[in-house]
Image (cartoon, rainbow, N blue to C red; front, side, top):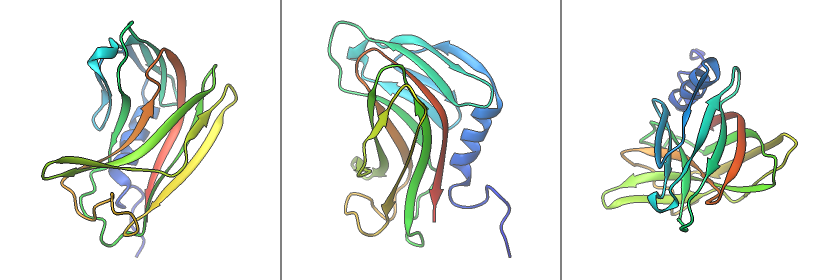
Length: 178
């Protein structure tokens, strides 16, 4: 029997993204911003991140970020996976479309909660974002990566963004777990 769309393991994350595409919003960037339930931005407070975001119709996010004079270590866009058990799964991955006026490099990982904090399992490919819309797909093989625990109390897909001033359009993103 076929399951209803969005009822698979990747359903909650994709519903979060669909809700973002369906609404329009805008606001100020800071070291911690929640765009919607399950989608948030965290930045090292040392960066003094400021700027603006907007969610245009049919797209996810346009970010115009500025940083202060001091260096910082991270700017991270978190998407909650709501997936605690990967034992029956073979692959966790994502597909995204992005654009930026200046070339940017973005890293992606799956962060899994542990008893002592968390562990990051980075996808093998870097995302290279250009002025022209760029598509990217990457996947992690479950059970073949020591840094991807099969069971975890929580998980996020994280896009690590530049730690300097940048502009970025996250046009679309989908996750898949099979």
